[in-house]
Amino acid sequence: MEKVREIWREGRRVGKEDPRRIVHAFKVGLALAFVSSFYYYQPLYDNFGVNAMWAVMTVVVVFEFSVGATLGKGINRAVATLVAGGLGVGAHHLASLSGPTIEPILLAIFVFVQAALSTFVRFFPRVKARYDYGILIFILTFSLISVSGFREDEILDLAHKRLSTVIMGGVSCVLISIFICPVWAGQDLHSLLASNFDTLSHFLQAALSTFVRFFPRVKARYDYGILIFILTFSLISVSGFREDEILDLAHKRLSTVIMGGVSCVLISIFICPVWAGQDLHSLLASNFDTLSHFLQEFGEEYFEATDDGDVKEVEKRRRNLQRYKIVLNSKSNEEALANFAKWEPRHGQFRFRHPWKQYLAVAALLRQCAYRIDALNSYINSDFQIPTDVKKKLEEPLRRMSSESGKSMKEASISLKKMRKSSSSDIHVDHVLNSQSACKDLTTLLKSGILNDVEPLHMIALTTTVSLLIDIVNLTEKVSESVHELASAARFKNKKKSTVSSEKSDSVSTVRAMPIKSQDDHVVTILCDDEMSHTVDQSRGESSVDSCHHVAIEIDDDDSVHEKHEDGEIHEHTSCVSCGQTNASDVLDSDNKRTSYN
Image (tube, rainbow, N blue to C red; front, side, top):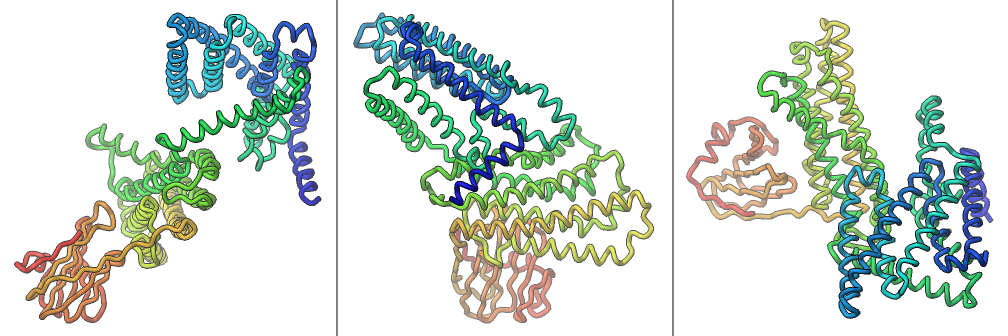
């Protein structure tokens, strides 16, 4: 009973939001009842026979919430049916000239070619925007006419009857939609723009044909299923009026639908499958890369970039920075992919109950970060520019905040791509800590009164930039935590630890490890006095050494050299007092035995 009451409350809420939805549901029922008379009324049935069912099918799939949507789909369906019907008749005629043996082979080839070409054309942006439904009906009608014509002697009569019933069904939808409580799309758009853009979502729900399909949860996953439910119920109940064996009719139609559906599913899964889950996973990793690129390039663009030099290079650089806008508009695509992914069987490392909701949670945080980046980008392209000498006052911490946040997102992207779980000591966690450390340094710098002599207008612009970067740093930490939760829920594999024992050396052994990032080259150099063995943990960048003066670690994409002394402390200097080496290059240039591994 509680479930029934919940459905009732949901129905009342949806009805109160827009009472026209209730009217629309009754209009659909009226249209279906009207076109059913083509089957019930004997004179009409004598003319059209079982093809009267096409009128019922047309009403179910064409009748939309607004007049404009109904007209659009109705015209698309009528034109597509007319063109496909003509081509289907032509294909049947050509195939029939080849004789009964070759005819089915040619028909199959014709169906394959038109379906493949038409499906490819549906991906054209302009075609998809206005004619996607029409091309879908073209494929359906051509296939039905050409295939069913193989068993029909009067193919022209068959095409004529089907086209007539489709047109009658479409006209019924249009007339009822226009003359019975019409919902004008133009009027809706005008009213919505005049009142409030927030109510635009009501109009965007125009492509609904029954009241239940307005329920958000139902629409998210079962909208198409309810549409087919209406269609099947109408076809079975109406056609049963002329059939003595209604159960046999239902059985045959259900069997053919199941066979068609199973064929689609098997071909989709086993022939070059396109997994929505994999697409969502790749999209999320790509969004990380996009934001990472902006944050790592922000310092260069904000503090040093000018319009001098090659115009093409400047435009290319700024165009690359604009890629973050893709993340702003990715919500609908992410939600659609997540809904599709829930239906997919297990494949690769994606389990049946993979945590797709957590993907959406991470994506939402990335969009929040992208909104801050969008605001930050406006200061790069603003006509009002802060003098360079004012920017320089805060350059060092701001650069670090932006760069370290970008590196953290880059590492998160790599973790997602490789589906590896990060640990608390992982590199991208270090980048988060470094960005937070830069925030603290910035706070200390601001408290010192370094901006006291800055003009108010420049002060406002600079502090706004600072505030946005601080927000991004905080969001980066949340994103890092969210990715870690995703990795745990999705059971990503732990990063493997690499252990290497070097050969004996009088003084120096060098271990070249696989880079954690593709562009990095990590060299661990260990200077020893006597025989010893050591292990290197690549994932943590640490070494345990028996009897050693220091460990020098050089990273090719970073000029800094870190040296670990016997006292356990890490130094970023290029010289070592305890062992007398002047810098890491002296160690690397010495003629000592080296051990390398991949």
